[in-house]
Length: 483
Image 1 (cartoon, rainbow, N blue to C red):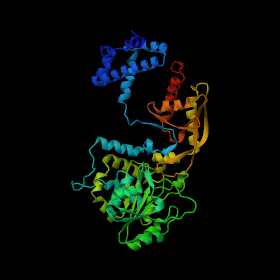
Image 2: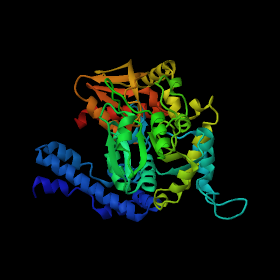
Image 3: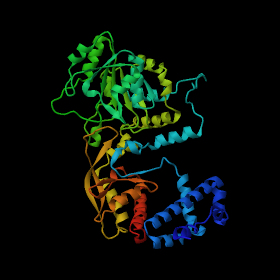
Image 4: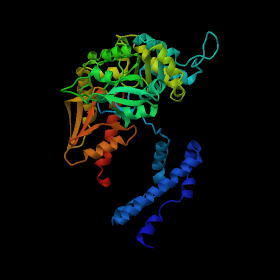
C-alpha cells in the first residue's frame, strides 16, 4: 500500500461517527440529515487537505495530520461546522469603515422606536389595511401618509419599495408614450447600473434631454416643450457634483415653466432629508419640505439613506397626482409590506421632535458625533487590543475622514478618529481577511498596508467583538504550525 492510501485509510468512516455517543447527541439536537451532511463534508475536507499535503511532498505533515483522524479529535470541528451552517446567511456585521450609510452593509440602522414597531407588527395582527371606524377595508398608506404630510407640507403621500420604483411609477402614470424633458447634466446613474434614461425607457416615457452637461437654461426647456410633452423632470445630483463653469435650472424656474405650460414637475431628490444638515457640519441639502414649498407637484426620495429608516421610495406632493399614482396598476407590484410601513412610521415619528431626532436616529447620531466622543471611543478600542498584539504589529490612533455614503454628499469629509494596525511582514492583508470572514464579520479599511478601524460607525458592543476576533485571528496567523 502506498503512503497516500495508507494515510487515507486512517480517515474514520461515516458509520464510525454515527456510532459515537457524542455525535448521537448532536443528531438528537440538530437532526440526522444535517449532521450526516456535515460528517460527509468534514471527511471530504480532511481527505482533500491530506492529499494536498502529499502532492506538495510534505509527507511528515501529512503523517502528523492523519494521526488526528479520529472521531474524538474531529467532534469539535463537526460541532463548529454545524453551527456555521445554521448561522444566518444575512449576518450581523461590524462596520469599521467609517461609511455611515454603507449600501453594501445594509445602509441605515433603525432607531429603537422603529425596531419596537417591527417587533409589534411581527407579533400581532395589525390594522394594516382596515378602517377601524367602519370595519371595512382601508388604505395601508394612511398612517404614514398623514405623518409625511405633517412633516413636509404636502397634500398627500405614497410609499413604494425604493426610490427607483417611485420614479418609475411617476413616469409610468404621468408620461407613458409622451415626452419628459430633463437637463442633460442630470441623466445620472442611481447605482447598481440603474440609470435615469433606462428607468424612463422602462416606464414608456420618451426622453427629451436639453442643455449641455455643465449648463442649462430655462430657454432650453421652453424650446423643447411641445404638444407631446407630459412632464418636466428634475433630478438632484446627490451622488456627484459638476463644478466650475456651470449653470443649472433651479426647481423654482422649472415650477414657473410648469405653471405657464400647464405641465407637472417631478423632483427626484434621491436622498431626501427633513432636517438642516448644517447641524452635523455638512453643507446644506434641500429638505423635502423646501421642495414641496417651492411648488414641485411630486417629490420622490429614499427612506433608507440620510432619512435613517427602512428601504422605501417615498412620494409626496399634489393630491391629484398622488391619486393617479395610487390608481396605476404598477403600484400594487411595488407596494411595501407591513414591516416597511411599521419601521417607516417609527422613523418618521422621531422627526416630530426636532430637538431629539439627531440623537434618536442612528444615521444622524453617527453623522453628528463630536470628535471628543470619537477620541474616547478610539482610546477604548486601542486599550482593548494593544495588550495582546504580537511584536511587530504597532497600533496607533490617528486623525482621518469618514464618508456619508448612500449616494449622498460625495465630496464631504467628516473629521474622525481611527485606530490603525501596521505590520512589516505583509500579514496585515491576511489579518483583514480573517476578521472579515469570521462571525460576525468585521469590515475595515485597508490602505498602504495599514488596517484601519474608523470608530465613527462602531456600535455598542463592537469593540468587544473586534477585540475577540482580532485575538483569535492573530493566534491563527502567528501559529507557527500553520505557517
